[in-house]
Image (cartoon, rainbow over all chains, first blue to last red; front, side, top):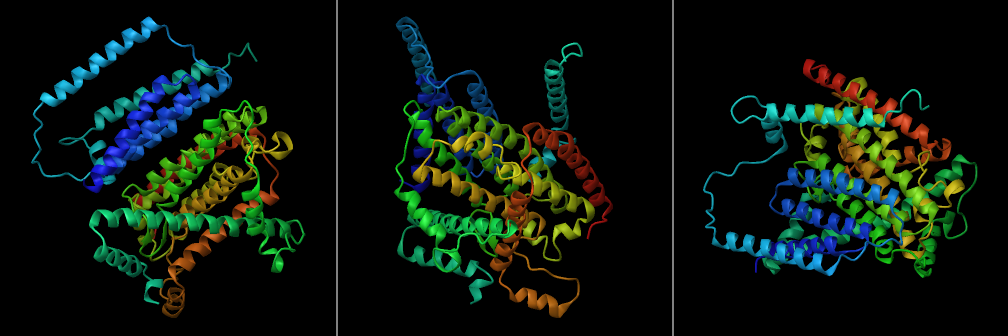
Length: 171
Length: 361
């Protein structure tokens, strides 16, 4: 087997194991850490296919941002000895059947699909290329979605400040 | 001695030597192992040297002698400390979350290892030269805080938890300033790749070429990176007078040594990034058309320049630690959100204007 295949299957195996652990663990902080490993595995896959920008964004947004936020809220709200309740057997059965059904359906569809190897020329995904496309207003430019998203983020930020702001009478 | 000035001779020789003996796939794995071992040795050496340096610098600032007994001028003191740490019993609290407790020091070390891989040490001595260089460093160094948070929570100790929370709030806020001050220079270089940033400083370092905005960015970088490494005057996370030792109160032996080592490794990494972006990395110091002076500067090998600049940055950070009093948490957050961040944003606009007008060198 080629070296890249070995590396791929190692990363994929680690991701599957930690994804399973993340949903089955009864200690909530451990679940968050397993989720972190699964997300870091995704970043590793992006690094493997040489798409470094997406890998770094994956690390910043998911591992460095969202998981830290989750851990922070767990730190503020739960005690170390707390364990999540065991779900009722009936619920476990129904969920297992549903997820297994979904899994089989997905695998069957994927195995039936005839994947075509693209013969388009490879485009380089360098940072400067991405930046030009992101702010380009010509053919294939993304400046409008970019600006719309930034307005959405601004609105969310103002909303957060308004919620967090103390009223004059409280102080 | 040709390889001392261009390490690609050495690395190419190693690569060719391995390629004649092994298959390509094996060569890749062997080279990864080789790079890993090199960085591990570097970390161990850095730990030994920087701990000794810290103790001596603090001693000079406080008019003491510092360690003097083990070896000549106390040079073997840190070696003795390492042996002591290795022989200590690894204690774990009865109610601690053992898995996370054992994992936390490794998370911090892994983040440090991933970050150091992107540093250009000398010409041709660069483990991975990503197109996204600075973005990559910012991404992986944000993982270190997870280790601190886990260590604080899993210790089942209120001091540790408070230390971890403080440290989390601090690192998340100051990351912004570090990234923005680096971006100020990226406006000039036009690239995030660290090797290109170094090459762009062949005719002068950015701190000189970028005028006042570069100076402001450098000062902000120094303050924010000191805060990001949890060092004094921003060491609220371990504040010994209030929190015993903060997030690593319950750690002993080798795992404590990991936290200790990670602090110095992180200090080295931020100093290295600062030296690369602001002070020209391994580029020698050149003055305009002084041919003779420039030739003498070129004679000093690049790796000496790099470690000299990093040493200068580290000395500044140690100087901060032993001369400034510790900040309160509200002062710390005020400094970042009300002063550094607005100044930084204005500074980027100013730098973009300078760059557009072509007023930089």
